[in-house]
Length: 111
Image (cartoon, rainbow, N blue to C red):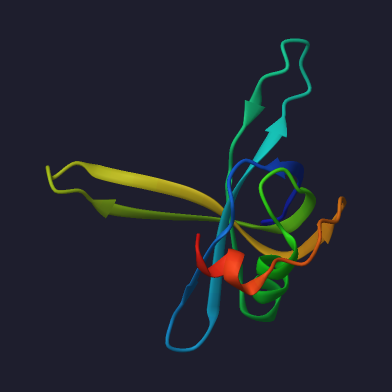
């Protein structure tokens, strides 16, 4: 089983890009650890397609979201020859737990 469920706030504005076939949105959220010291983890969340477009319209830095998805890892060799591993969450469901105003097209394009 590969299932991840998280609740957190966006730490930056979402980044949207297009491939030949779909829209891709990447965002980082702060997820509090259940400890007394209030530390957090900062997973990268990747969203595709119509859900990515919907997130781009409504989410901004500080938005509170719930994420349901799967863990995905990749690896690559950097310019120094060092093998680098990356782990992110590919979302299949995003719950908007705090709503912002729909983003203005000009504002979204300027970021």
